[in-house]
Length: 391
Image (cartoon, rainbow, N blue to C red):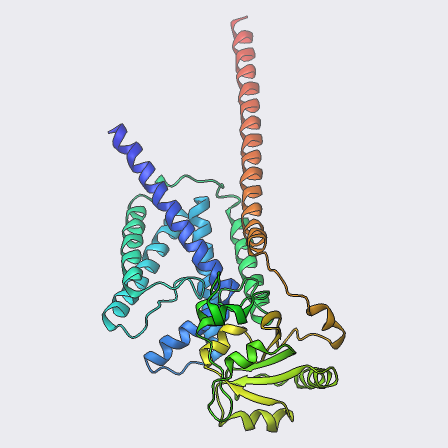
């Protein structure tokens, strides 16, 4: 019986660790790139013929990411064990139901479980959710077997920190650009070399990039091989494009013309581009590409890219467009160290929780020491009382 209890304890905590890491990673990528998750939700809405405002989709993407991050942290720290076990189980059942539908329907190839970071096929998603659902069911049966790392007195601090962390990361990524680029269009990479030769590390999106002019001719190779510096204003949806930065965009266009740069708009909607001209007075040339490609290039509508000799040297969202004096410093190709970026993001999440565990352990130690001293004093007092009675 004792051996069975130990085995059960190990199984529960192994399952708890797997579920915690899955939920933490899934929630984190959604919060780092909320618009990527919004586009996944839009695909679901269009598939089921729902009409949902983008604002609600953004709220849903952020809320789902925060919930997953919170539940992952609960399992990792072993707090709110019964509640978190049941919530994770119900969430996994919901995901399992969706994955069964996707597997049988076959119209949506990627479930969006990990946002735009990892594409998972419907069959792989189904298998994953079956396994995770079984694990969560086992934990529901034995929630108190999860080892608690933070006492009930201090578990609220973990809840508050994880919520604030998720909210700040998601709002920053929505207002500016994602802290980590999950798509193929990363800064500092030579698009021309990858497009022409598929050189390592080849990005599938760049290799399949297709840009057309108003006559329907493919001008991708010409655009990427252009030795001049080229600004690309992306407009994946003309009617929904934010025109609040029109003056800054027009100033950048004037700067480009004065300095011999090229400035083009890249949109998916040839017939609707006139709407953007009417709203902004745009006088730059327009080329055309697939809307999904434009969404992947930059998570903003409009967004701005700067190419130099086929290499992406700058990327900005509508809320952080560069000032003219910042342009020269942007012409050096950026070599983004994704490992360092990821290290900072993860450390900002994990280190405060580790500190909480340590401080909670110190508090328990002091409480235990105080209790031990009180018991010792109590025993001494009782011993003195007994001695006095005997006299």
